[in-house]
Length: 380
Image (cartoon, rainbow, N blue to C red; front, side, top):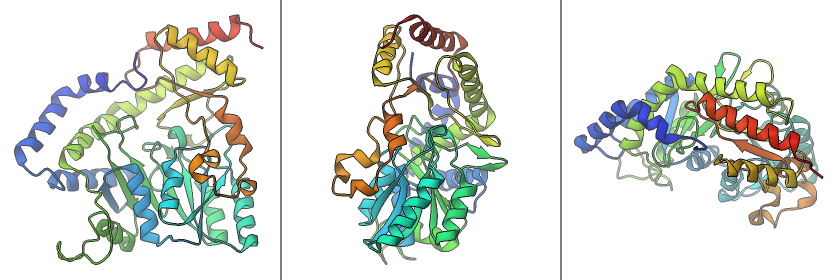
């Protein structure tokens, strides 16, 4: 059994996928070729924004957004502690300071009350200038952007939606990658829509920022490709990845997003009386990058992982060390960066295999193993 079965996906898409890759190979347009522009247009149309700029990774996408805003040393950027390292890494790469915000124990997304408290504390300290909020759509579920936008407007901050895991999620009829002033996603292979390597994209309706990002991601280019008007970076998407993403986007729209939601719904039905299952607020729709349960403590989790491994069932822990406890951020004031819910979750979360091609037989094996182990095995 695979955690995110890319082999089964390839088998399902093999005809279209092989043809797409062969066409790129025959074209000799390998970097920033026509397929990249076609991919950008397709993803912008699906999401519902004016601009999609494809780049080399989800991390680069976040960095490009901060560059477009001129985030710099002395700035504070507010980011959840319970997320992948890149969400905070890019802040430090710009010389700014990440301020870690705790998360909601049910949705795993940024906690609005703690966000307000951390912003007010930063303003009162007068050492950093609040500039932006990075709100992560963790595990596929969009953050509460109605509340986040209200907070951002109150304090005059930009909103950057980190939809690395959230592509395909929705709030009402509005899709992820439209909620930020700038939004980003990742096309890492295991993401809801992934390529066959690294890739990412930036989304915005702002023409000025889109032009800046387009320049920054190709060495700071100007109107002439050999006249570089700013210091940029090499973050181009290659044509092969763009062609792969076009095939995958079609499958995602046609059936994959619906199928992965069916798997998640069945998990919840079978497990809700056994473990704490993920909660999707009313009006929200997840793309289920991960299906993450919560158990009593770290020891119970370790034993459950062993029981699942004995049945060849893979699991993963996202994330065992929250951002505010990462070694790279040891120089920050931990007294102002405490995130107790993130610490609590780090000891209790466990992610199960989930993808559109997971059979009901495998779902039953996973759920029955969890149920029999937790209900029949004594735990201290």
